[in-house]
Length: 269
Image (cartoon, rainbow, N blue to C red; front, side, top):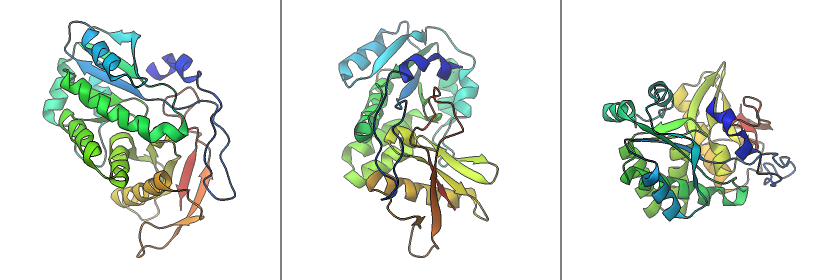
């Protein structure tokens, strides 16, 4: 419902190129660039505390006043519940109570994201999330991946990103913004790699358990984010047999959906 309401913003970013996935294959330029959409809950009397943080941050993020509301939205409890991290238990009972108590729903958006600036913007989005929590936000969910962490975990991720090495910072951004594993028949897949400028990942499960697929997905995601994948096979370590890689388009979501990945999917197996 809300994703389709923002179609006018999504359609404003056109014509950015994508880096090659294999040395001989490239992805067509996306018709729509991804963008961060943060759903920010609080117990404010106005939207001005949110606006003050966003305006002071000055990194291309804006508060959407048209869809933000100064009243409780009963849908938020179920919306946050289905959006919690599926790998770590980062959302506490206190966080659940904070969602229930909210009286304000604010939407904060990035501009359309160029692929070569994606990681920088992802880091800015994490820092902005921490600032919003420090300004009184009681819960934050990223609509573009349907992922929510608890307040303490958002703050921990932001702190880690500040002090981490370049490679570790990328791992932090993966944990913050990429939701996985999501089951679709015999496939597990991720959502959120598009805001980091890369394809999402599908893993043919076979006999693998969900957490084993996460190990493969995270390892491939990190390689996509740190270097071009030039081979058509991949393994997360020297002990595991290679799996075939096959790039393909995103067909799960419409182009005007925030979770649509214009860079497609990379299938393992």
